[in-house]
Amino acid sequence: MGRMRGVIVVDEERCKGCRLCIPACKLGLLDLTSKKVNRKGYPYVQQTNWEECNGCTSCAIVCPDGCITVYRKKTEE
Amino acid sequence: MTKEELIQSENLVYKKPRLLNDTTMHYCPGCSHSLVHKLVAEIIEEMNIEGDTIGICPVGCAVFAYRYIDIDWLEAAHGRAPALASAVKRMWPDHLVFTYQGDGDLACIGTGETIHALNRGENITVIFINNAIYGMTGGQMAPTTLMGMKTSTCPYGRQADLHGYPLQITDIAATLPGTCYVTRQSVHTVANISKAKKAIRKAFENSMNHKGASFVEIVSTCSAGWKMTPDKANQWMEENMFKNYPLGDLKNE
Picture 1 (cartoon, rainbow over the protein chains, first blue to last red):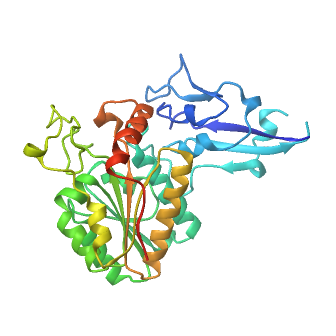
Picture 2 (tube, rainbow over the protein chains, first blue to last red):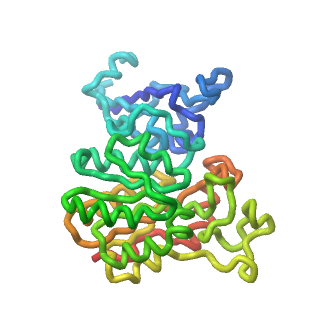
Picture 3 (cartoon, rainbow over the protein chains, first blue to last red):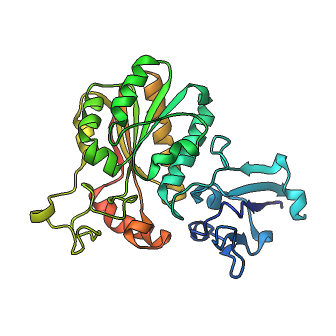
């Protein structure tokens, strides 16, 4: 049986670290960087375990600044 | 499957709308303004009318809206956006003309212009961002501030005997014969964002079809003005704002 695989690409320089996408991800795959910041000084969001992502786009929809791009594909794994 | 195999243009399912340009928005982290900008850009792109759209910027946090969405914009004097929109729509009746205003602009200094433009039944859309506070100037009390809510100019909370009551401008708009569509939405969850998008699209279509004035209120957060984190602000909005500003259509003709 196949499943949906997804991955997000974050525009790190545009992200303001508002954390709204973190509770929006029902699989809990997102977190802010703990040590790195972007040029504006904000910690930015990243996917902690991308292999679990199903590409539901919730994080991208709630992102106020449109920083998240989502790719999704059905696989036969 | 590696990340690189997945990150291919044929697998793309969601990206920032093309009309929202690469300029980083000046809004605070988690601001509802940014999200509504994104929705407006998505809708104009989907309706394929970017060359026939004129937006009217307010004074307030959204004063720089023209820097972020690649359509034609005009900047109105404080509160005068509906009056300017009326003029523009009468000159270009085949264009989509909308105003984008906050509660300080629309419900305070521009109450007269707003009510008269709606009452004349101008074929414009008014997008009203209601966060119950003056965000840009430092969190002062607005006409829409809730009873008991603390702001920098009512530090002990809004009291009826001193400050009066929250202004229900959307309910007033629904009583006017010139309006065809009056709705109140929010953008704090995926489901609400989808409803808000449908509402704005319907309002834009009404304006293009000359059905009368459409009024879309978005109940929003101001995490900086409310002095909360963005997710706390969303919770506070659900618990307090929705009691006074219940979501849903007030008028749909």
